[in-house]
Amino acid sequence: MVKLVLIRHGQSLANKENVYTGWNDAPLTKKGIIQARHAGYLLRHEKISFQTAHTSVLMRAIKTANIVLDEIGQSYLPIYKTWRLNERHYGALRGLNKDYTRELYGEEQVALWRRSFYTVPPLLKVQDQDRRYAQVPSQSLPRGESLKMAYDRIVPYWTEMIAPRLLAGENQLVVAHGSTLRALIKFLEHISDQGIDGVEVENGVPIVYDLDRYLKIIEKRIIK
Image (cartoon, rainbow, N blue to C red; front, side, top):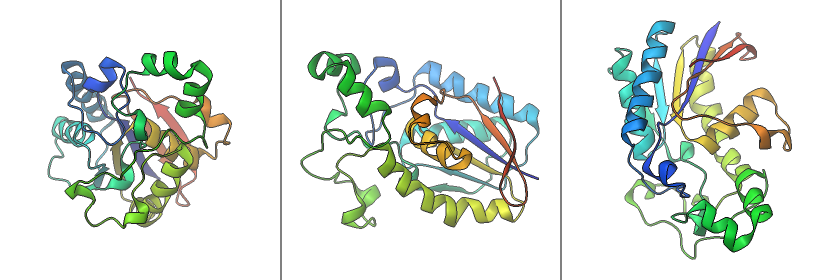
């Protein structure tokens, strides 16, 4: 049996202000730092020895991962940072208050943008120009994503980087974002395109999977 732990980053300033963030960086709030420390505290009592950690290239996830690893006394672990674990790209919505977009576009449309598996938000006019993505092929950089599009970039990372380590008996920690963890959970639990609408991932709350040698789920626990 091997363990996979998923954690959404602690509360960010954008979470607090109810703003679409996507690939923008947003600092952790004081509450977010406390949530990250508490997640580490909970995992310390689980006594899980990880071999590798994975996170996005966005600071709120990276800082959460560092805090968690420090709390569990495993700061020495290698951490793989990848754009494939970035939050879903909210395109032209990013930076906007969610309540404002409901007033502007209507509750139904915003619900589709936020929760539907296939609906794409309004696109940016140009791709992000950031050194973090300099080695990413231009055709792979989104100007906005549906959850399906985020799913399609995350699953290859799972297949190439996470699953082989789990199959080798190595416990893995993934610290990422609400939407992209929903996409990974959809894949792991074989949730339908419609069913994923009801899945929520809380900030700073560890999700622990016990997996068999074929990476089938034996048990799932959400620890608080």
